[in-house]
Length: 434
Ligand SMILES: Cc1ncc(C[n+]2csc(CCOP(=O)(O)OP(=O)(O)O)c2C)c(N)n1
Ligand SMILES: [Mg+2]
Image 1: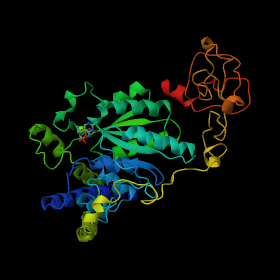
Image 2: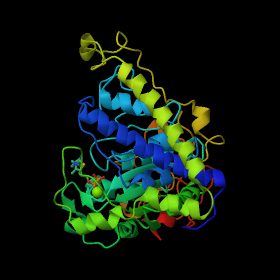
Image 3: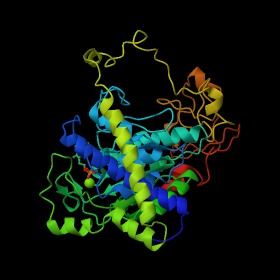
Image 4: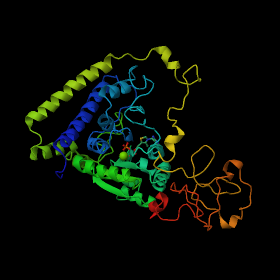
């Protein structure tokens, strides 16, 4: 561990790792008392991953957690009581008892997208969030996590390719904890470093020790800064270990004893305490203060959760299907005024022209009359004289020199010029492919 952070940052990382572990320890107790509804997953030994990565985000940034990322929720500002109540299906929980585990988000304030159970599906979703932020000129970064097992799904590859070609400000943390349920990583992917998957998408990647919170944080911070500065998506492989079974029901007897012993000796909190003590950032007194602060906080958060009622029986039938205005007014919450999403306000110019939708340059074509702005007419198509819908006719200009390459780059020049809109290698799509 290198010393490079402020004292407050070091102590924050420590506090959140401790809080993460204490929240999950409390939930194990609740589970054994039969107060948790559904499964309970654990991130024991992986706290440095959730905390170190989420701590690299700014308040305006977006994240979407997976099952072992309660630490990331806590860093982003979710109160422990919400995590408890959600798992206990209480009426005051974010989903009012309709769903368990961490299946909740907060789009309004904390910028959290709810987890999706289908592994990998958050990758294209968060890529969309990242691109939306760019359109709105918000300079945000979107982050999500995926396991070693989840990195073998089809949607992982589709999503990463899409993020790469769009140069989305997106950071994916690949949490390699050596196991996907009872399958060891070597039995499901023939790579030493899962970060190598990034090569297929032409994007940068890092490999980092997931039990060293300072290394995780500094790597994530660099990745987040790069993504924010327009370098496109970045993959971080974090090597760590799932210390318990897949969930509470799984004793994980299939894990070799030596492997477990190796990683138990590398507990991220114990390692960090050693570092903080050696650097004189933590002594017995300040440790005791933190112990007491967390104990007091969680005791009241747990009381609140336990005292919250279960949802009334009749609520089970409500809010399941939306029936329109008699359920609630369906309004597009995320609709933006046209002026906000088009130049000069948006950071990326719209690149095709349809009446009422921004401005740009379209190219005509028989079967698909509206292409992205930098797509030139295909020479062989010979469709220059084919009919073009009225809506786009006025915007269509013949490119000076036909090229057979189609690009979906979002960078185009909305000026009335005879030159092809994109000729330099500066487009996000082109750069990403290098
Ligand atoms: C597409 C898909 N396939 C299978 C599952 C069932 N499933 C849930 S978690 C899990 C194991 C995931 O392992 P990994 O991605 O390594 O994450 P970890 O549990 O180790 O954090 C499986 C197979 C699922 N949720 N989605
Ligand atoms: Mg795994």
